[in-house]
Image (cartoon, rainbow, N blue to C red; front, side, top):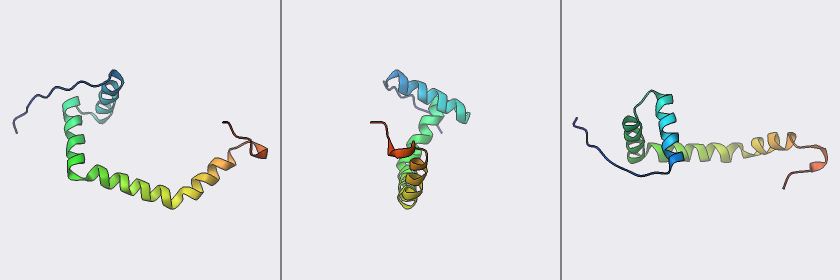
Length: 79
């Protein structure tokens, strides 16, 4: 498949995140961005986010319990 060059301006922190994530996956920046766009266009990202939201909703009480167990006695919490 022929490749087309695109240009985009992003904040340096976003560019650095993209570079690191691409390297972590063993991909070029172009291949990493192509994967993100394909996942988004195919609905894969939305499906994954929905699944994560369902998981968190189902297990929120457990996360709350674990968080509360790590609090100092007397219920003192940082503001």
